[in-house]
Image (tube, rainbow, N blue to C red; front, side, top):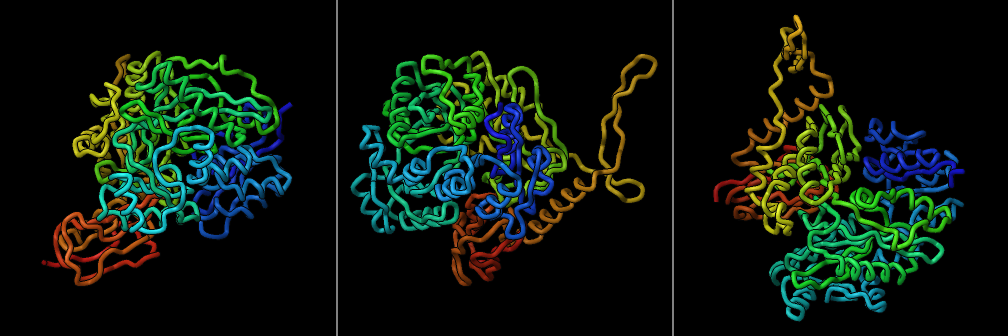
Length: 587
């Protein structure tokens, strides 16, 4: 008998689709929720039942606990799986689920609370003998305090949102002149993403490896680890590529950090799947960083290397079943790599690239897996995280997996939006990745951005038909007298493709029209801060305003020196792509 009849997945996109698949294998009904802008999203049609969370702001719908619990009541589910992001690590929501008589497919609320506060987690881990990065255990209150800590601990420092995770609310401070701005930005992100502006400070380790350990713990006192994942390759402290095993971890170190992870989980009476994140210094020191009390985006590489379904384990643990395997049963076989395919433009500072997907074709073949939340015609909104798909491969060793990933990325086609497909192809072919180094300084380099642009799939010009309607080239294969021919025919462009093309053309036209004096937003979003006023003199690269888009802060900078003659935006304002931020006159 299945452990539950129905489960509500309180999430969206690729993680919702991925959880539905496991539920279906277990014979459990899958219930989806969706916001107004997600009406036509893939996860909605992939579920057995789907419920609208409106009315209200679409960006906040998945955070509305009352609406989620109302869907749970109406649909008759027995349990709730939060996925990752949104309310996945919200102890208040976990308690509300339990009060409603439902099962929370996740850890105990006490563990979420302790590990959700980075300062509380550091104290608990230090008490349990788990090594932590030197820093504060109490909240930091001002930029001046950050400056004093810099003198004591040494520069650079890392300011972190106490409730943060996933790179949100993390700012690196390399000197006292950056302290105030970084402090305010970390506070702002902590409040925006986690409703908690509390921040703390720790020593920033230069060019470490980000090595995390997957753990499983049941309600019967069993805790095991499933090896490590190397998540070192990041930009803006957000992961881009993950792999297991780590190129820098041998069997002895694996056993040591595995023991640290198990001790950390036991210290908070953990239950469910979780991840102990840590930093591995160039000298071989391993420090506890934080614990993610949920399923991770990169859980897929562990699944490929161990043959386990981590979501299945979560569901069974939540149903009260003991772990069915012991530590000595865990085997890491071969090598697995995951590439996150974000809707971002690496040639333009990784700015978000929402829009309509006009064409879509996934790779396949031996050892290739794709977890996706889109299909052809899908709209990628600017309200949510830019992750649209993940490519995961498994090979007999790292080099085999690397070559397999390059093959898979070359087969993957996503038209209509700019993605990281070309970036990943450029990165995995770079000597730094081939050699298994940290690729420090390479990920955000102009060299890699240029190569990524060369490798990206180019959008062809769309010719018009005789009636003026847009046409696109469609390749056909024909046979005549036993001989094969390939020809191109001009066919009507789908309505959604026409709309996406016109949107891009309007944005480009607006940008060109104001390129000389006007600075425009390269994406739609919400203005978080305006850093200049009329009459200010600015220098090239100086921050003019900060726009939040797809859950990321994006700095809009001055392209050249000048005097601000006009300011076109204000804090809290929603802006569209190509909207004027300010106008720069001659200095």
